[in-house]
Length: 320
Ligand SMILES: NC(=O)c1ccc[n+]([C@@H]2O[C@H](COP(=O)([O-])OP(=O)(O)OC[C@H]3O[C@@H](n4cnc5c(N)ncnc54)[C@H](O)[C@@H]3O)[C@@H](O)[C@H]2O)c1
Image 1 (cartoon, rainbow, N blue to C red):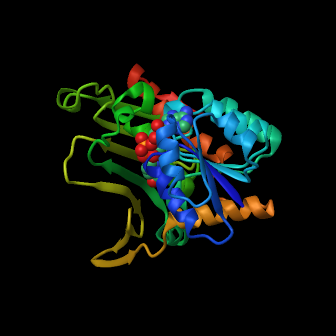
Image 2: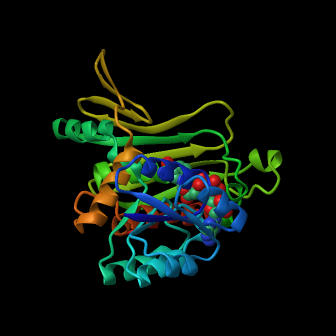
Image 3: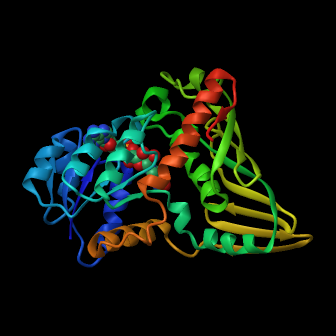
C-alpha cells in the first residue's frame, strides 16, 4: 500500500513513523510548502519523493491513501483534489475553519469516500472502559479541560490561521464529549485574551475560555481552556454521575465512588490503533471500524465554531 503525506511538520512525522512500523505500508511521498522541507522528510524513507505541488504528487504516484497534517487555515484544495480522484484520506483535526468543511463533507458523501479524522481519544482503552461504566449510572454533567501552554508554531497564535485554542486543541475534549454522550444543541462561550498578547508578539487567539453546552440528552457540560501556563498540563473530562465521579485524562482513568478510588492506566497507543483501522478500511473497503469519519467530525467542528461565534456575539448559539 502506497501512502503520501501533505504537511511535513510534527504530526506528519508522528503518523509517518507509526506507518513505518507497519507491514505492507510504504510511505512514498511528502508534499510540503517548500521543496527543502519536502525532500528533507522524503530522505528519511527508502523510496519517498518530495513535492511542493499536490496535483503533481497525485499525477506522478498512484497513492492508495493520503494523510493530511496541515494547520487549520491550509485545508480546502488538498481535500478537493483527493475527493476528485477518489483517494481515501486521513485528516488531522480540526477539519478547517468556518464553513469550508460543510462543503467538503457534501462532496465526500456524494462519492462515498473513506475518510478518518484524528480524534484519537475515541480509540483509547480507557475511553472504552468509560463507555461500559456509563451503562451502570446516570450522568448529570461533565466538566472538561485543556489547561496548558501555548504551542510555539507561528500559525497557532494567529486566530485567523488556527481558529484559537478551543478549535485547535480543545476540540479533542468536545469530540470526546460527543462520542460518550451524543450531540450538543446549545453553546454559550466566554473568551478573553489579556496575558499572552503582551507576552508573545502577534497573538490574537484568546488565552482563556469557558464554553457551556446543553446536550440533546439533557446533560450540561462546561469545557474550559487556557494557554497561559508554563510547565503545567491538565487535559481531560470529569463526569459527574449518581454513582460517583469518572475522571478521564490523557493517560489515566480514575473512578471515584465514595471513598473508593480505582485507577486504570492507558495501555494502548491510540494513534497506532486509528492508523491500523484506517489503512485496514482502505485495503478492505469496509470503513465500519473507523470511529471518527469526516461526516461525524463535522458535528464537533460545528460545536467549536459555534463557541467562537458565541464568544464574539455574547449570545448562545442553537445548533438544533
Ligand atoms: N491528534 C493529535 O493529537 C494532534 C497532535 C498534534 C497536531 N495535530 C494536528 O495536526 C495538524 C498539524 O499540526 P503540526 O503540529 O504538525 O503543525 P506543524 O506546524 O509542525 O506542521 C504543519 C506543516 O504543514 C505545512 N503546511 C501548511 N500548509 C500546507 C499546504 N497547503 N501543503 C503542504 N504543507 C502545508 C507547514 O509548512 C508545516 O510544515 C494540526 O491541525 C494539529 O491540530 C494533531
